[in-house]
Length: 149
Image (cartoon, rainbow, N blue to C red; front, top):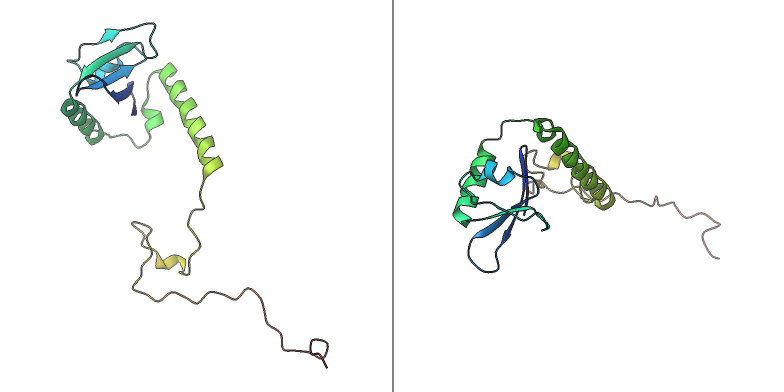
């Protein structure tokens, strides 16, 4: 799992050899900012240069409190470090392009009017009867040319 915080980027995965989670970072100090008591090991030649093994409960509790403490209305503007902000913007741009290439329609075809959807969750309100589907082909009364003799 990748975690983008405004002052740290972490990759958290299961360890193959024990029940702890392996918390990895690319930048010195990122792990310590989130897990101050973690014993961080530097591995400059590894994919992630810094790593620490942290108990699952500690990771879960810490991420819970990180989410609870969000006070910014815009994440990108909360990132103060210029290099980190630029790197995050690159990820944002890449994911935005991915979204554009794979975007689903905003709402699937429906027999309901727009006001037949709940404003909070966007789900159809099924207490009303759905409207009849519109006919796409206008029928004409038969003319002499259409009638075979």
